[in-house]
Image 1 (cartoon, rainbow, N blue to C red):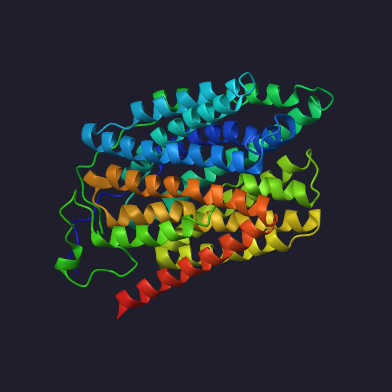
Image 2 (cartoon, helix red, strand yellow):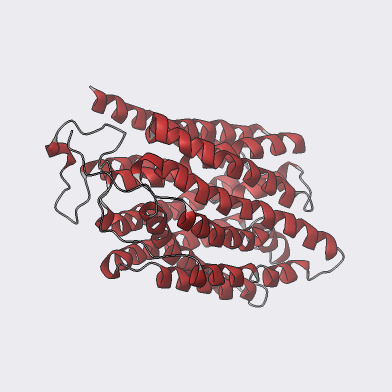
Length: 409
């Protein structure tokens, strides 16, 4: 198998700061994500289909701009200015949800937030990938995901405190939407003063997917349309199938309320989910460095299917708490590991484009996934979207296993 020269040992200082700015970004996002669908449904009176549409449009907008941002990152070799614009858009769009409450305004503001999410994500992935080497990349992405997700633990805890503080106020949702912009000031400061740009000058130590290590130089050769190898597109196709069944987590929150979890308890349930996610991200990312990315992703998709069946069958609040905690293992085994997998496949000078295509595909398919989930909820029953997601995740896992076995022959 053809290999590339080893890179110098890289430390995790830059990864830590990228994760830290994500920590404050996570605090902001998860101060309002657990109550946003409740605000839209219970206060503003929008249907589940509208909520699915608005969340799907947010993710679709993020997807399109992930591709644009990834392309710009490769073209100009700069990530920080692009990430800055993304966080700035989110900072201004979230508080405005408390002021503009019409359907078109809600969709427009969620779209702007989606643009912000999309603009920052691919360049951040490039920063992490460029700050690690192949042998420790899973751990590096795990560290970033851990810090990001601990922000998503702190956010719901702060949300709980704010809900308690404003429990008697009719404007409690509005106050929270304004508060959620404040942590993004810290994020922008860390980005400007601490995060360093990375260079794509050095090739990766190994340029082949663990999912079928290349057996010859021919298999390693990138295809002609932009230098992305066939293995990347095969992996992307399987991810796409999984994603069409992976609707917005807003439906998990609605399901929690549907089963009987109180408004005050929902942020704590969400915090528990994120705590498990954050705590498991580094060990499971490191595990992917040792046993292969695809094996850990398969474990994650199996956990997803089990969790979604659990959400479909849940009858009590205690069951929701347990299932949400278990659901955190799905995120820990897939989010960072899948992105480390992409970095293993693609050479540094094309990583921005690869992450843009990857994130765009995942995000665009989230729109039909969320619309389908909303339709199934309203037209059949609240359990239907979760059965649907579990079935598609099982099919995607079987396909990934098939491709892995086929490559090993």
